Amino acid sequence: MTALSPLLLHWYHKHGRTLPWRDHPDPYAVWVSEIMLQQTRVETVIPYFEKWMKLFPDVTSLANASEQEVLNAWEGLGYYSRARNLHKAAKITADKFNGQLPRDLTDLRSLPGIGRYTVGAIASMAFGMDEPTLDGNLRRVFARLFDVSESADSPTGEKILWELAAQNLPKGQAGDYNQALMDLGATICLPKNPRCLLCPLTEVCESRKNGTQDIRPVMKPKKAVPHYVHAAAVVSRIANPTYVLLAQRPSEGLLGGMWEFPNGRVNADPAKELSKVLSAAYKLRVRKKEALGVIQHAYTHFKVTVHAFRCELVSVPEDKNLKWVKITDLENYPMGKVDRRIANLL
Image (cartoon, rainbow, N blue to C red; front, top):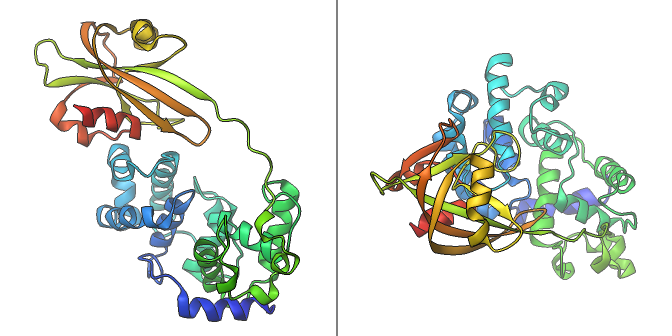
């Protein structure tokens, strides 16, 4: 055990956060929390986790749920491929491993959505194995503790940081060690303005000694984020205007399996291009009636501005991915944030 570990564990046992998945007897709970916590803050995850565990308390209940039920429970948490992979992995676990998350790391790694980081987190926290892990918080902590000048998001930098995580792992205490590092990164070793004076590892932190804590970790320059403009149609049923038309997205890719108002990307005036993009994308013919609102949203790799319009139907094709839905039932259809905001305008 290095000098780092006793200091860290002593701090953690006094100041560790109380979280609903910690010390949970079921490895399934650790698995769900780790998938939810990927690229999402703890405060956001807690209510989703608690709701999820009531809806799907074990692997079997999740495996038996429909994709729409799963996406509904996940709505608002973003990165929906996580939910679809969790659902797929639950089905495999129910069929192949008798509903129990496998302890064998090769089997664990074979499940959809479980990569090297998640394997380490589940193995150490749920099964008590001596396995390191490395998420964004831990990358930052180790890059500062050991003053790593290599880009943390490069293959070389990643290799160095994984080695440091493993070298400092206290045998028999990997679960607490990994969670302590996560808490330290979330509460003390912050991305900006790290709280070094409160840090239990100040004495062993190389970047603190060298005055480089504000420039660690080193990251590769980010690419410019593109911005797209879309036009979306709220199409009412002629015979019964309490129904509107929804389209279901393909099961793979961004917002896979979610529902949306028919829309398309435009290059000029959204009001003028609306009919053209709907005809091209859905073979749907409409007449624009009035502007409903403009919605801005930022995804991970791009930003979008969506102009929503109320529309009158001219003709709609027979298509299993298009569905008339009662406005009062829209809450039962999982949507991304943009389309949920359009639905709320109604």
